[in-house]
Image 1 (cartoon, rainbow, N blue to C red):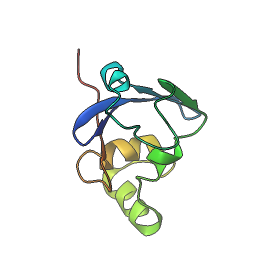
Image 2 (cartoon, helix red, strand yellow; image 1 turned 180 degrees about the horizontal axis):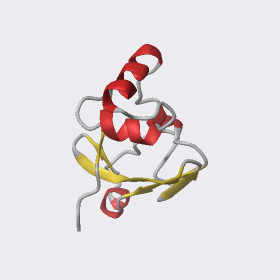
Image 3 (cartoon, helix red, strand yellow; image 1 turned 180 degrees about the vertical axis):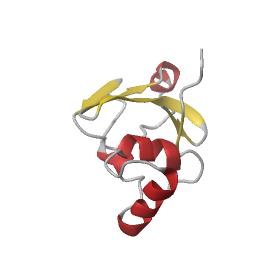
Image 4 (spheres, rainbow, N blue to C red; image 1 turned 90 degrees about the vertical axis):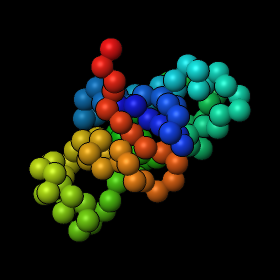
Length: 106
């Protein structure tokens, strides 16, 4: 999925498996010194980040508790599918500057 900061493409988040996630800054965004990092935990000191779980920065965009249960039920998403829930709920209205969108078709 594509990651946007204030409507500008900042990078790409990929779920390779439920235990392997990769975030890569967009080249143009990374090379533009005026653009801030999307998170303090993912500074622009490196272009690619890998993790065995959904990065906490993205996980914290998700609802919790009863709201999460309700979203998963209504959207028919497994409650353990953080990536799927992020894709379904963080496209338009999120707290902060970050939104996500499905990858554009080439």
